[in-house]
Figure 1 (cartoon, protein in one colour):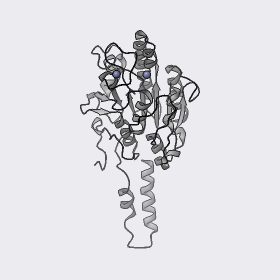
Figure 2 (spheres, protein in one colour):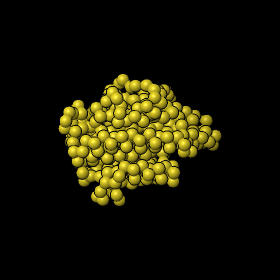
Figure 3 (tube, helix red, strand yellow):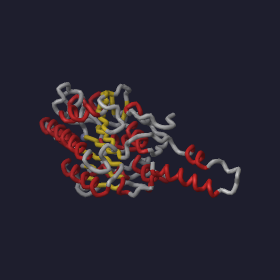
Figure 4 (cartoon, helix red, strand yellow):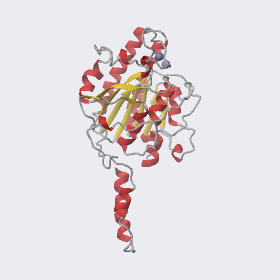
Length: 328
Ligand SMILES: [Zn+2]
Ligand SMILES: [Zn+2]
């Protein structure tokens, strides 16, 4: 919005200086060249990805026993989506790359390959001129540091976000989720970022160990960490009532008894969840149009008024009460 207002102002200013009476009105040409600008109240977007939680162990369990705080404290003020899916490769790096680029890529899962397209983080920085400290990728898994990078030769590629991944960056190992949340709070306080991704990895790690109780406890811990983070953000100047939070997963896990692993096309691996909080959501509603991960990048860009080139997804405007200006 600041960017747009300044453009309009420049337009008015230059039209005043114009010596040619035939020059078209600069204000109109400036505004008509802008992408769709939503009248969203959102100024900040935070995406939390809880790694490897199966729908049937979270929102799909009618007792909601493993996600009591998101279900009872958050959902009544947000939009919950019961038909949200991973429609690409059901592994960590491919799932996260679909969320951040809006594009399905069969990217390696070990951090050894970069996204082939820039992410919403890159386009946000390119479009707004914001420094790297205004966009952050904060992940418990070190291999997700690749989300901040790309192989693309697009001009947006040089606008990488800041990162804090794993113990000390790519190749240094995983860290606890409580550490990741503590670092995220420090980043919010110190840098006041507008666009943040947080990855919590413990449900996936516990499940791979074959530890059912550990997996369930890790889901419950993620529930507490997310609810506490939302409460905390609502007390921070610059975030209260201006922040949209999206909570989702990179993938689920195999259906039935095979909870240890994931990675194929089964319903358990594909069916994940989406909860959206914030000033623009249709509060207390349940979404009905089936959606998938690639729609998240488009939605984050739409909320921030940032253009994202045509991708596999589209903005989930049906989740918001706000009608964007110039909506097509
Ligand atoms: Zn996994
Ligand atoms: Zn599966």
